[in-house]
Length: 401
Image 1 (cartoon, one colour):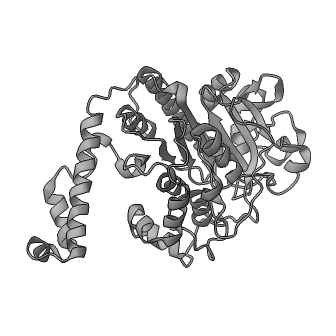
Image 2: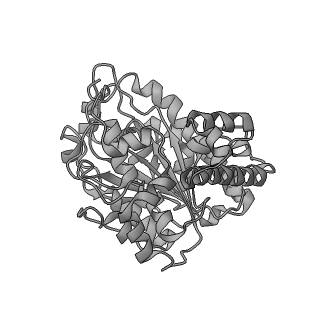
């Protein structure tokens, strides 16, 4: 299970994230982010569409989702894990590939032309670290140790640059159940204020900094109340209460949200991978189906795209557990009524499978750039062209119709 125990020195960015520093505060103190916002803000009104980012933590195995099930090299490298004809739904027009039967809703969308699979996606000089690779996908910056241009995730940079609204980007991991988001119990809020050791001084004769902190707490209370009030009437089409349910509740609030972030974990399948996927994939599949049904009921599905991604793929050859260890390239999946359905990127060949890992052909920032430019209607250049980094933005085909 190499690569899972990551007792590494944290970068400046990971320290800030893991110690709870607020993104809004980071934006205020970051001169580079302020300069970008002043240059590009309000230059484009955008499309008003909704982009949902679904992060699959742990490193989802691309070959267990989209299996080249007729490929002899694939079958040979995975004598226990390879999917066969009975385990997949063949792709229309490309029957040598099949989507696992655990993800029948994805197959349904693919058949409708509403699922695009971008194959063999990663970034240059990949690594097998969960933490570092997740940060690279989150921040859109490859050289984390030398990056100085931003302290915010790429989608927060997008918000600060083009639509600086309090609900512009929402993360279900932070909101929890939006109907009870924030500090509905003022006792808890007061305890948090006491933790700063300044509460008594704030009550009388507050300095400018202390007054700003009090104002921030008041603003948190205000927007929390707004989110709670706006989601009370939400009624779902199904019984699941996972991350996609939270996302649907937030979308129902009609608060100007343009990006919704959800996360599903458990995909670090070093052992008993088939058994793990028999739980992981159906949960993701069924909760995503419910989300789509919820957005159809809300009249929002037609302007929604959902992007599924993971920090890295897994090895082509199974281990003795049986599972697969950390690899390199994986697949990104886009779903929605307006995506250009089908296979994109580089098809998985026998030569690819005969390597230890799937190689990298498409940079993930190219996929996100198309989402930003075509789907949301904003210029992605100031979001990813930072810290003197360059990347190949060419995906090879249009991801939207």
